[in-house]
Length: 78
Image 1: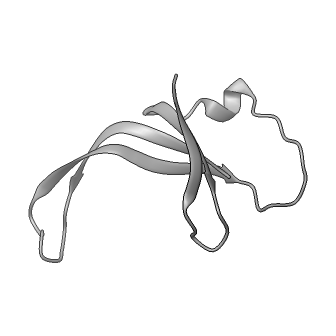
Image 2: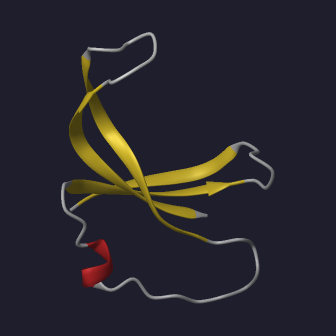
């Protein structure tokens, strides 16, 4: 399971590569907050843990091991 912070939008100037010199606009940019690796455990997420500049949404994703299929996901607006 992963808790992922999503920045609503970000604009990035590309410095090199095939898009060099272009400015690209991305939506729902991922910023990983934390992951669970399968062992039984409990954890708390405090409001300060979710106070990340530029983030407006969070997603929780439950995925089978080894980059397997996503079992379920939930999007939270903050």
